[in-house]
Length: 233
Image 1 (cartoon, rainbow, N blue to C red):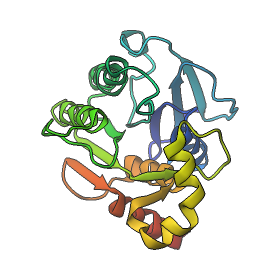
Image 2: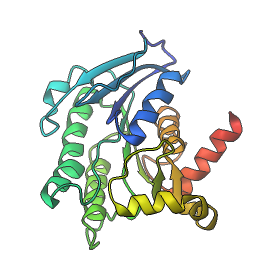
Image 3: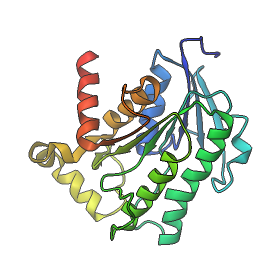
């Protein structure tokens, strides 16, 4: 399907993940989106006239994606890995190097594209955090802010509630899922549903927020945007 002049071309990286899969489904139904390019290592299992799926195995080298990334209006980058599931060097490679390499090729192919990055609560651009995850997310944010995109949105969710049942990656996530009903009441700004987060990322990537070139959206901000979207729906 060829987008009309008013519709946007959107790239989603990590469309088989928890957040990326919701972003893909929402983007395909979004009236302002005319075409979606989903990039990942495995098929998303979705068929749609708006969808162009590109399988790519080595995110250390995104040069082969230059053609697919040409003429895009926005990208949503959801590629990531859970802390503790891989060695530290691999965590940094996925969190920082893959993000920077993809951004390099996207910037060269679509210099006017908006970049929406799935960062994380506690991301530390100063590099002083004792948590590797926070340091690496902060490092990736710094690189994206300096990459030259006209608009960059850093999404920093706290606990992302999966919505759909799944096999939790570790004990902490199993515990959080179990106490979520009480947790969301007591600490509403420390949780966000995966589908609400995904929908907000798509809405912001496509429509912007009317604020500066680089914008950090903490969990409280994401919830506010999600609630506003739900009220309009």
